Length: 568
Ligand code: ARG
Image (cartoon, rainbow, N blue to C red; front, side):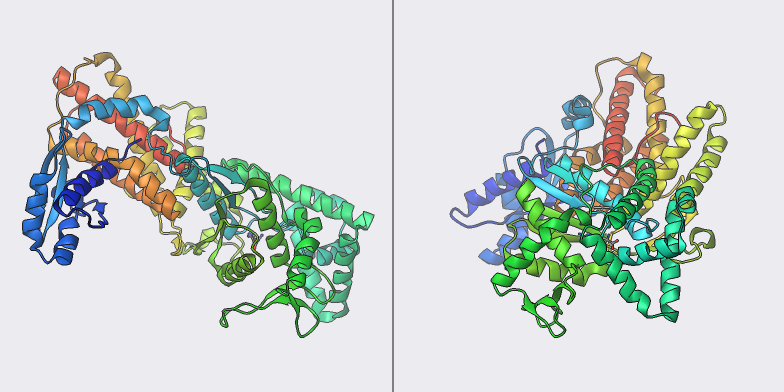
């Protein structure tokens, strides 16, 4: 897919090189903030004017003259202090709309990542505990980013770094052996295991020696004690079954679930390597630590004084394993911003050990806020995700029943599922991921605002127009000419560019915002232009436009992990 933005950049570059041969030019093409200033714009004359001590407006005019204007550009205007504005020609859309249709599901894809691998670390809940809100966010954001990176050509390996290891399991094992029983846990695994864990912490208050007992159980687990191994495996299995239900509902999957325990036998090699190179040293209390260059970052602890491994030790082994297994160019950890400092430490140590040449990135995100009472649970942070999805789906069903009472019941349910889950995902993805996500039902399910249902509705409406128009196709189309038609059409070629930008910056919200703008323009178009009763050639043009809109909306939502409904 050739980006128009790139083509225009080349046209400008050619003219600028002609004017200033031998100059090193850094030419940028952007989207004007105000659509009446054209579809693309360049500030090259401002930049160069300054550098060459020339009047930027005069230079802009000169460059505009020099640029060899292809047919698909209607006009090039100079504006403001020296901007060059480009307007796409209505003629351009004749072929373009057909191309979009032909590309279908592939429209929006590109190839910067071709031949390169990215590994993503997403979701990663901790076993024996309910999936937390930050895990839900990681799942949703990580899924979107993985899809977006695949769309720009990367081979994406999704490896779920399940939290299935660590000293806390010693505590759980002790608690289970002391107060637990199989039947109760089996009936309602995660809440019951959580209860045991909480009980342990209550009892520690009374009896400090429990800490040591918990540690001893973990040690036994690490040393391969048969009973502890068996129990722990059982807990992991029960937890995975529960998590799987949520992953299924969210329509996400993983290529691998290499949890922390997978690295159990791969850590010693790292410890030895770091020690022999003098990167890991004995700290005050006999622990093994990696002091870091930056005095503002505390040393990274690699091994406890009793020899137990730590979170960081396992992560280092994971990075080494990823490197050896996939040789990726990028490793992404989609994790709560609360772990920011930790990842700085981890990546520093990774660099010191020279574990990989890949870019290691912490893709951080903010908190999710629930101003409405019924969304938060007793414990505040741990929200019952199933309930959140249930409620979203129930509310979505109400809306569908109101809007389309004639739809068969099964279809209504299916629509409600896609709308409910979609609205949760969209609420997360439409915002800058570093700001806190505020969750309110009204906004999330609004049919007028920036929400999944709004986009899904626009899509279903467009599909219904296409169904009605399918028998009235004339083949030959008139040129688009109405402002509302052109406003919608002009946004369509930007889609692959927006996808590429969102991949480069790991920002799904760029796609969400684009889709919202597109759907708004579709609504204005639909209000202003009659599609089905227009003259045959005008109708054909409008039907093609509607069709291209459906392709882009569907593909865009799919990148966000959101499904569309053909009817709503
Ligand atoms: N399971 C961890 C937690 O819930 C998150 C893991 C994040 N990924 C990583 N590579 N450390 O806090």
